[in-house]
Length: 381
Image (cartoon, rainbow, N blue to C red; front, side, top):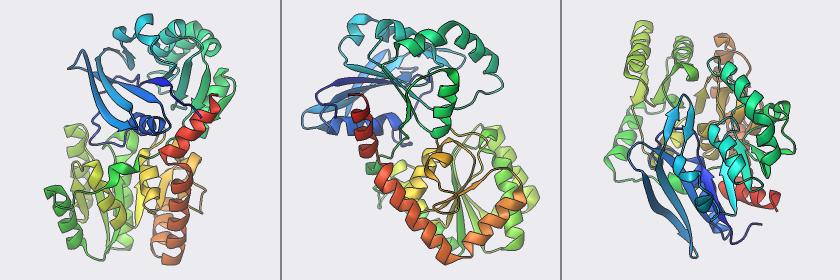
């Protein structure tokens, strides 16, 4: 168990995050590390602040701080010059870096070798990144491997990916949930709106999708899939929560209109994290036909509330789902197979309830951040 250590956790990918809208992995793990007796600073990319620190959690005198740092974005690389100073990094006992293939990981391997911990998620390379990563590996990979203190993967697929790259002693840590994010604000206008629209649906079966509306998440497939489901059972509704590029979102709903199912889709552009539990508890199945998912926090969230998941083959799915027992993994995008699976389980309440119990039991036991943090701590002693 780590005790009285100062930990720096750097989210390298250069995107601006909103802690109020997402169950952020860094914050979840950071809180649990603080509860174990450590202090923890999290670095997030900012386009607004040069360097701004705010305390977001405190436990028995130890603090979790978010530090917003202005960085440079180069393609998908995030670079934070302010962090690349020995004086700054020397304050920390351990430095956690996300993704081996980020320039920051390579630069940190020079400055804080032997206290640098990799916590990696991706398990394949996109077409645009493939050749760039080949160059990166040629020049940087060997030094990174030699200078890391410990290597963790977020999923079994990520572990296999790192081992193929030459990393040694890789351990799948998984990711967890910060369950304190799920206390709904019952009197908020948003919560009232959610409940009002659910009341309109009434006793009809409900499929739920939460996430960005984009091609990677296979939204067009989701809409066509729902059309095929409605053709067989018109008493099923689809709840969609998420946003994306406006022209893409418009195209998706234009497509739903053409298929004649727009009225059966209940759409929320965004929902505060605290109120998502209202939807998870109301739905019958969570549908995630994503083409690629590093982990998919929505998988954990759904299963935590006992909402069974039907999803594609992806990092999170193969790490937490025992196919046919606590969820369903469909290995291809044959919509007929998806329709068959969804209708079979949604019409067999006994099987659905059994799957719900097993899903909830697993997440509560093994994928809460406190469990992950203890596993992390014992692994780096």
